[in-house]
Image (cartoon, rainbow, N blue to C red):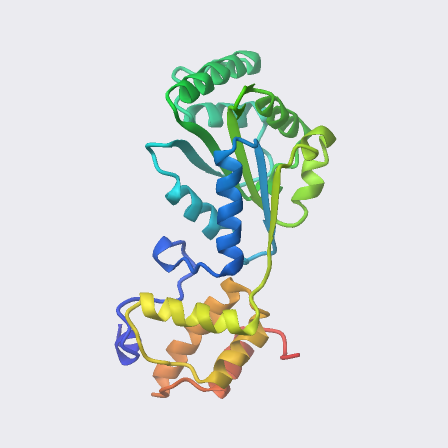
Length: 273
């Protein structure tokens, strides 16, 4: 694409699709990874990550899944697509992901199969982990009760299964549908928007991964991007992606604040504070 070659980019640097090559390990994401791995390795049972829309929850979920070595963990990521899933469906899905064969029909039988399979995983020296993205969609008390039932399965070293839930800030209210479950949260982390310096580092990181070593945004443009995006990674990507295309049209190098203003206006971003 001509606009990429104009800025000496080998590929799109600001796509909002998930690609672990572009994972930016800033302080909070690195901290979150350490805490989640601690929850998994010490078999704590339940860990929760919350954050606003576009703050990197899915990116973090896929990153930790990628870092859970198959030689040490039996791990899977489930993405909740709608709020109408049932407890039976969810138990079956977890059973399938953990390798249960010929999953039973009744909930009680599925729980028995899961317990047997989790014991097998534990005895083989592995740790079982299920990551659930968009967990705030599980607005069902029965599912919360089943989660608590799964966390009751344990051995002397700890829980047989670690659940890591990723969701919007109101996930806490969903977990509170079963108060005993909420009390079992062993690790909780809240992802926040970037400050201005991290926004700059994030932009530079993604440009480097895409093959560009130049500063293609002026400092004023980066400040502008941060102000419009409020440090939200998804919005930073959207602004930068559009600014690169707009900058190419007017053959502007580096991209200036006025171009970012124009793009933000076209995208109906809120005015600068």
